[in-house]
Image (cartoon, rainbow, N blue to C red; front, side):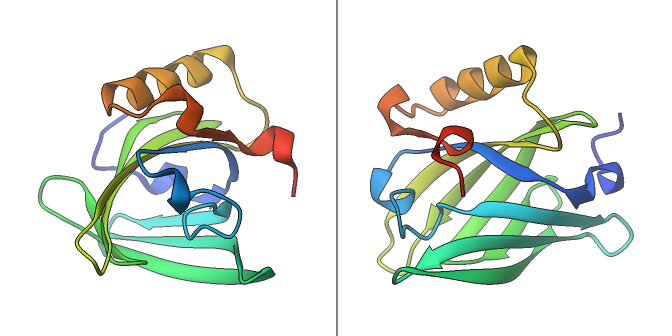
Length: 150
């Protein structure tokens, strides 16, 4: 696939795994413990729209956040501070991505995620684990969303 053509990634996705260099960001009620619902990539406009559920103060909230494609192929996203989001691997059924968040206090957090359309393939889980290690995130900082349910 062409890296600049991400339109085929648009559609409904589920969060399978998220890892974070700062566990607080993905703990229950954490701002990045997101249950992805839908991603819409617009290649012509150079945007991505994220639709997801996140628990805030014990209540589920449905969020919509937009990102703008940068010259290097990453997306700049405003959510809980400034983010640089990038898809590192994708197929029709899986999406492996990473995000660097700098919050309002200037604290940097690196996150990786595995999102699936149907079920996880072993190969996709391996790619997620490799990326997570590459980004220096400890294995105990991985949350399995499939086992935790809704």
